[in-house]
Length: 136
Image 1 (tube, one colour):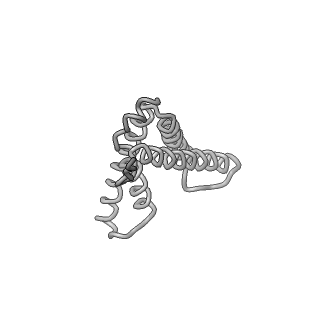
Image 2 (cartoon, rainbow, N blue to C red; image 1 turned 60 degrees about the vertical axis):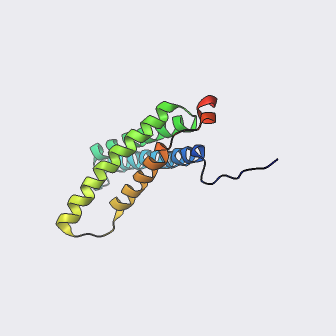
Image 3 (cartoon, one colour; image 1 turned 120 degrees about the vertical axis):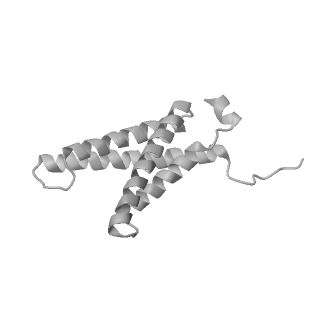
């Protein structure tokens, strides 16, 4: 029997990578939101206020929920991760372009956030394989 090797990464593998990146982003968002709220509650002055911490934590929950559902092979998780990554990539791109046009172009943390969201979006957009959809 002839065994054919994969010419490119399996679409199921790209979904798993997108899921785990979503888990990392979601967990980080929850940790940052919670830590910020806790530090502000004990009197420490930070640049991020309670509203910002709530937004970061809420986005972390959405990323985490979408990623976990994607890893459990649920199409709703894939759609959630695609939606949140697309919205965040678009919003971040807008901020990067406006900031770059007014203050000069340089690489910063928002550019890294943009790249991360584009990677999650691209990996989440790959169509699931038939085996992936059958096992869900």
